[in-house]
Length: 335
Image (cartoon, rainbow, N blue to C red; front, side):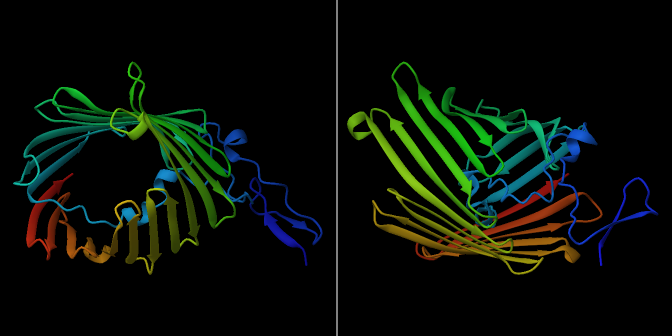
């Protein structure tokens, strides 16, 4: 029997294809049917797809870490429009600097894919003048430019610029961090990540450092990266002169995610292993993240939404058995 496909213009009519025939190849919808939504990739593209960036190769495990804090914290968010948000944060702590912080974020109207919009500008500033800012924009559909800067104590503490190119099956990026052109100091990092199949990706990193505190004035570090992902399971690893970093992420169900991370420093001969998990209970509007590592540190964060008001209660706790340190935090997020 032939295959039956319903036509888009005449829903009641059907077109019958013989067994030796096949539908016409998929054409990117954005270029012919929806010009206002550019750069949406074809869903039935047989290629492996873009693997993302090398910086985010361990992202699934990193997102499971509980964001612990100590003391009291109040966060008030306000959406001024569909593109502009502001946030006010008040922190009272004996470990981290206390005080007020103002944050703002802007998301532009240029759409890349189905979820990404550019340009993106995010910044935080404190009354003493300390500030952090990030800006991301695109040139066409494949090239992204990123700029990040940090100001503390009336001085530029950190600055980086990144130029990134995303192809159909690979991503390459070049980052220049903390440059001082007069003294010829700074850090230059080249990242490359290639999709071998839909599940396997291989990459490499080359970092070149120049500065007065580096033996010989210059140092080059190379590392290799690997990632295997099936959707529910992801295994990623990076191996270089500095050490070995391995992460394993498993999505057991819609409510439970688990991860394991191991870092080995070959220079200091030190290693640390961490087990993490996240429990999401939508029926109770509750998210719980916890971790325990080989340094006898146990950490957990519980976030509970307080309906019908647009707020959530956050409780944080961290205990280090070896150092006999215990920190507790209580926060309220509004908006």
